[in-house]
Length: 213
Image (cartoon, rainbow, N blue to C red; front, side, top):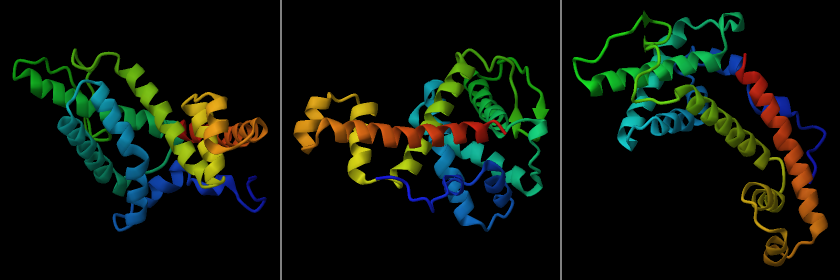
């Protein structure tokens, strides 16, 4: 199933600029729901990989969202001052730093500089409790982009084509198994892989470019 010519892929996912501008209005429940859906998994996954428990990671998600809520009324979108990705990275890093400092007790080093724009402390090196934070962040950011791209593309193709793509590409199920289980031929499998893969690649590239603004 091809995407109808009338479908504008660019319009399917609002740019971060438009979404973040919408968040200036606390009453925009749909905007806040969209923001939460886009980013809570990312924040939670980063916190978990940094060593936090489920409940602690959920606390970091809530704390990060509180920072975003507080900042939005005076938010001004200006890519020249840094990307949204970098800003969110700093906010989450600050939340994790605060957690590890509390967990270490009152004797923990206070190498921090307060910055209201990030909602908390930015600790150099984050601390021994958060190894390789930047690598964790980048890995989870890319996974979050892929998940978002897949969710967008899933609505553009038939359920069967997306299923075939998911099995063949994402789960690496042998093509012979797919043929027998879903009564399709190799041509159908290759077509689904090509068409859905092309859409996913385009959407991922668009998301990645937008995230750097």
